[in-house]
Image (cartoon, rainbow, N blue to C red; front, side, top):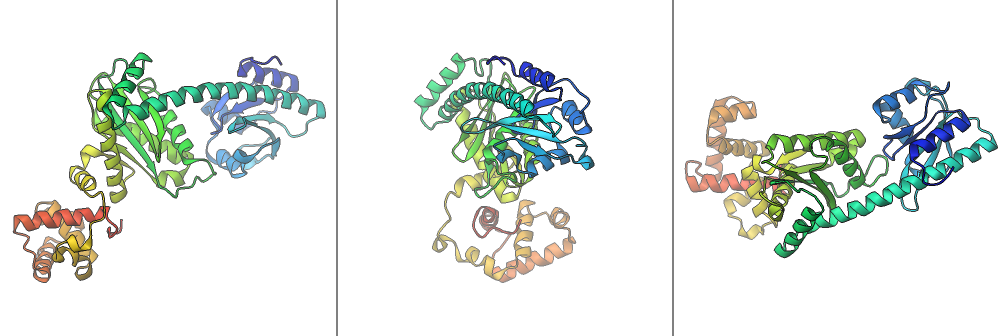
Length: 405
């Protein structure tokens, strides 16, 4: 097999020589290419061809056997219960640094000559994938460096990066920009041992097909995965929220453990690349709100009070600086009472709406508010006291003494 041939042609050559069905998947088991059918086709192969990827129980079965850690030819026995009525030979395709994909050959028994042909073909496909990956890696590295610079705190750095982006045709006609920030829990571990950022990147690439395919950039910046969206017109909140929800669904499909540990924050529209940093700062604050409120997707503009509290509370305040009446609330009041008072203040003292929110009768609201005032000495009819108490109770969600979610 001459080097440099397209992957699809290599697949067909291997299949015709072996007279077996052959397929190549990427590391996430998304189909790259497949041969024509032979008599060895089964339901699992057909479903992967129709959907262009291995999903559901078949995917769980393959990954559960440790496929991503395989380094040599491995036999995957038939498993009729999930549609795999044929054995499979798996040839892991690896570069020096990473898994590039898998080559699958249906049928277990194989002669020494067939093994040599398959291994030779797998090596040519591995080389082709390595060249593609290297090109994509170099392009991604350049794009990530520019995105990092365009979000820099230094105006001169942002200006140079924005100019470089335009010269490369990135966001050439965009007049409005929104940043999404994807933060994963520090101690999060993938179900199948993958780096969490790789799962997020794969989910983003899948979710951003269509409208955002040519009008976005992404980067792994420190401890977050950052997405920059661009549009000719102001990006409707529903559109950016829809993309964030799609990313979350894709992450959940790939690895539920990572999905449960992540939050996606969404910033507001900005008029140019040079000010996109403001949307990034807002998205980062939105992530803090999501952590505090147990939300997976949070738009900064949808939670103004919490967003302001999160922005102001950069450090845990010293106990001695807190008014005694507030400092003692956690010790003198039940958690249910504090949540009731917070809801009462959030509803501007409306007992009916508070009762509906808390699932209790409004007379109970009046009684418990009166008891709270009597035991704390705090007058909820006083504007300053209401402001102080509402801020303090709201800020609990962002402090170490946060209420249970």
